[in-house]
Amino acid sequence: MGTCRCAILNGLSGALARDLLDKHLREVRTDGMGRTVYLCEDSEVEWLEERQRVGYDDDVSVLRRLQH
Image 1 (cartoon, one colour):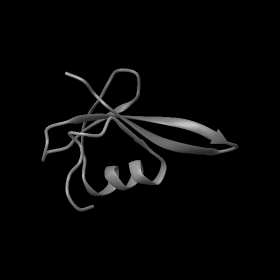
Image 2: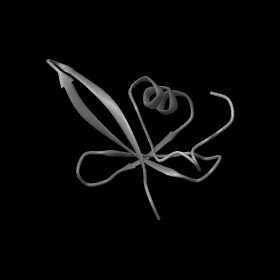
Image 3: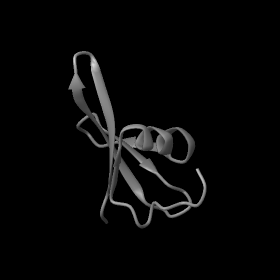
């Protein structure tokens, strides 16, 4: 993944979001609405994963940085 950019990004989607989820973030909890919250341990930034439908039986991961 290279250098962590979590502190400067606000959101990602598609393959970039999936790559960040698979290689860089750690799952920490769900938010009560069935969405998963992840943590970047390098920057301590939390991310919320949402799934958006894009077609029949297909969805895309969308990551939004949580503001604290």
